[in-house]
Length: 114
Length: 115
Image 1 (cartoon, one colour):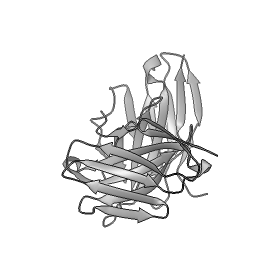
Image 2: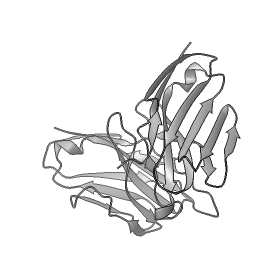
Image 3: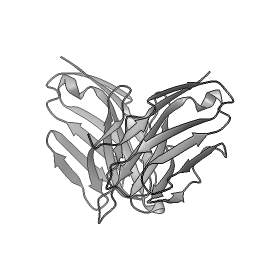
Image 4: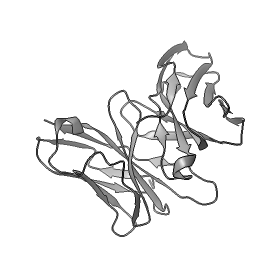
């Protein structure tokens, strides 16, 4: 079963624009992580935000977390064609203990046009 | 390269055959995870190990699926009597759980096609 739901399912933007992806989840979490997957390849960890954090930055990435709404957003600023990929949020659910398993959403497929 | 490796990268098998996949984690990582990913979906957790102990296996899809990590290093995932519905990408990940570090590092996956 998948806990997270990403929105939108697909996003197409021009290079240089910002891309925002949203994730909603259902249960209490230890942390929430975002991963990127290029076509047909494994996942690459992007950023982790803990349940007691509200915002985190890493380079061109900005993640927010609202535990009261059970939602998170990933913002990619000044997008590049190389950012074209699928982006997944994954929750580390409190029920299962930290670091024991991740529950992924269905992903947002981002296309950045040059 | 010291990342997670998986073999084979692709496997085509006929329905009813058994298949086994191997995962070699990052050497210092104590946890190893298996996920399955079908087309257009996010990965789905199957099982995980801490060292050689399999701590969660209730998410394995059926009793045809089993996993081992005999010496706490590499792991194998076996699917017996494969069915067409088993066609998917099987992903392995590893992590070092120390303090509050919970990032998982994924391998490239093994793509299984059951004909």
